[in-house]
Length: 498
Image (cartoon, rainbow, N blue to C red; front, side, top):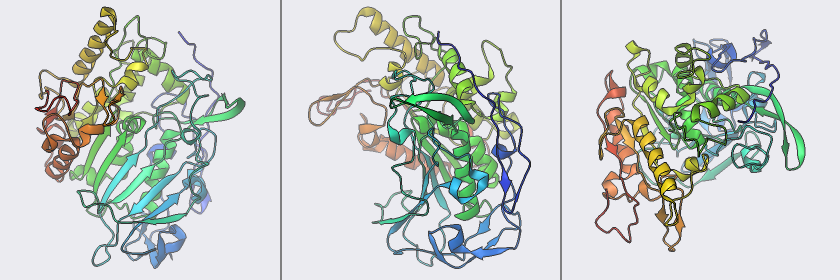
C-alpha cells in the first residue's frame, strides 16, 4: 500500500475589494471549510457605480451599479462588445482580476482560466437569464511518479497549466450555435488544470518531478470553482435576483467536480435552487467506493475507499459540508472522505431540504463498464482472450455499479430517477476499429440502441424541459432510466439491443 505523503500547512488569503481582511485558519481537514470558500463576501459598496468595461472586456460601454446586497454589480445597462450577431467569448483569469481570487491556480502555479461565451444578442438586447456552467474533465493525479495510476509526472501540460490558453480579457467571436435547448444560454467553461477532481485546497502540496524537473505543486480545484462562481456573480450578471435558469454540469473529472461543488452553486444561487431553476448533470463521474477486489486494487492501493482516503488527504479536499458533518473521522465504513463519491452525493443533492438535502433534479450519465475507470484497478479490456477469472471480475464490477445506482432491472431503478447508464465495454468506430473506452457518451449522444428519441441528447432535453420550475420534491421526482445492457454496434445490431 502506498504511504501518505507529508503535507505542509495550508494558508488562505482573502482580501475584499478596497481592503484586506484577516487571513483565515488553514483548511487542513478533509471537507473543512472556511470563509474564503463558503461565505459569500461583500464585493462592492451598494449603490456605487463603475464603468462596465472595467469589469470585463465583454462589456464595451455602459455603467454598472453595485447591487443592494453588495455581492456584485448589476450589468443590465452594460453594452456587449463585438458583433451582436455572433457569439462572443472572453477569457478570464480570476487571479489577475482581484487579490481575493489569487489562490485560483493550476498545478504549476499559473492562473486558473475560465471562458464566458455570450450568445448572439437577442431582440431587445436583454442579457440572457439562462446559463450553462461547465467543469472540464481530464483525469487526476496525486503522486510524484510517472505511473498512469495517479502519477503526476506524465500529465499533459494543458492539464497542469494554463500556459497555452489566451491572456486574461482576450476576446474571440464565432458563428451562432445550432439551435437547441441551450444555444441561447450564456455558456461558461472552467478549464481543468488542478488534477484533483475540482476539490483541492493544497496551496503548498509536495513537490512533483514534472518533465524531469522538480516543480512546486498545488491542488486548488475548490478555489478555482469558488473563483469561477464569484467572478460570474460579481461581473457578468449571474444574479440570483433574476429569474435564472441554470444547468450545472461536468464530465469525467468535471463530473466529479459537479457532484462535489453543487453546494457552492447553491450557496451562490439559493433562490434559483429553491425555485427549481437549478438542474445538475454530472457525466462519467459516478463511481462506488466499495470496490475491494484483492486482485484488482484501485491505483494499486486497495479498496476505492482506501484510495480516496489518500487522494483527498494529499489534495486537502474541501467536500460538501453537510455530508462531512454527518460522518466521523476514522469510521471504517462511512468516513468523511467518502463524501467525494457520487453515490453518496447523489442522495444529498436530490434529497428534500427537510432531510438536509438540496432537492435538485439530477441527471446522471455513466457507462457501467467505463474502461477508463476499470483500468484504474488493473481490470483488463474485454476480449476473447479474457480468462474466466477476469470475466468474473468484470462481472463483479458491473454488479458493484448496479448496486451503487440501485438498478433492479432493465430500464428501471429503485433509487436514481434520471439515469443514463449503458453497460458497454466497447464500441465499433465507422472505420471498423474498436474504441474500448466508452467514457464520453459517443454514439449514445445521438444513436442509442432504442433510437434517437432515447439518446442522451434527447433525454437531457426532456430532463431540462420537464424538471425546470418543478415543485418541491423535484429531486426525487420520477424521470427516465436507460440502461442498455449490451455492446451496441449499429452496423451489427440493426434492431437494437437492450
